[in-house]
Image 1 (cartoon, one colour):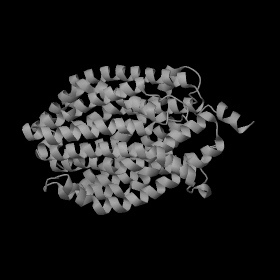
Image 2: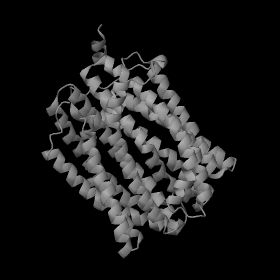
Image 3: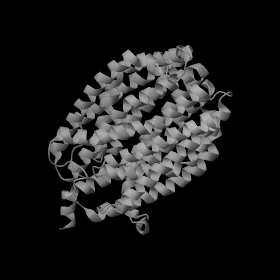
Image 4: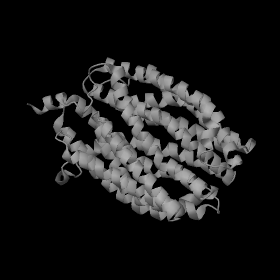
Length: 453
């Protein structure tokens, strides 16, 4: 059987260029969603354990590091997005040789990036936390956690790149299995290191990087043992200059988008930090819940990117457009259900992180302010996922950065001068979600984004 026919007939991967769109979106997104939930458990379990067994200062230390971690890793994870776009298009077009070199170049880039992050992330952690106005009482714990976390950067990036390769060819189940295994390891080690050995935030950090190592090894094993054209061969891992240029060309806009948006969140976090450790802990606790709520949206965005990428590669423009509309509808239905559930059970959920009534109060304040506007950010992420799948990563970047960074930073830095309240800071989120959606909708309507490259 010819190799191109082998791609078509393999059942374990999901080819999205023909068949029922609804079932394909769900078949791809549901395992991805469950996997993302387990990935979110990394930081959430960390927060629950330090909040219950160490104290609110340790909880604030872990929570305040999240936006900074996202900022620093954002650029390199964006390269994984660029690789995923190319691989989805090559897979849809059945271009095996290009698929081969895209995979091996992508893995090489992730290894280089991971090593650089291990070095520079560890060296600059304390300085960066000071820039974020981290309170002195939590600075030692925040610095220790952040430095240990960056020791696992190589595992983190290799896993994200490997998982991105598998998802680009329609396999969202394997990354799920690996994240389940890693989350179980992370939870068990959190309990062992923090509750039994009393290692505080250092124990949480070491548990996380060991779990990330497990997921990285598993995803590499999957790629090496595959008999598909995207099989990973250790001796072939090297940089193909032309392919690296294409990956970086698509990945840099996604990375810049993620990093700059994370930078705006760092600015927001710095303003939250200025209100003290109680507000930090309360907002940090709800941010963990918010992360879970956004996971399905990130899954639908990835599904839209993969669906559009494969169909653009196959030259099926109308099918790509139809899939984008269906994914937006699915996203809206989900947000309506999730938002209602949060209003009912939000206070109880925040109480899982801390028994302190003041901490819970500020978590509820954040919940009530953000939840009514979730649909706007959901549609924005799904549409931008579709734009990236079509190779319009730069346009997606401009829309996201202008709104979720530019307008948000303007709001936080200017409005808090006149209204110095935590609610003023938090309003920066829904306002920029709305403006971002308006720009996405206009580009989807007027922009010539659905055309084959």
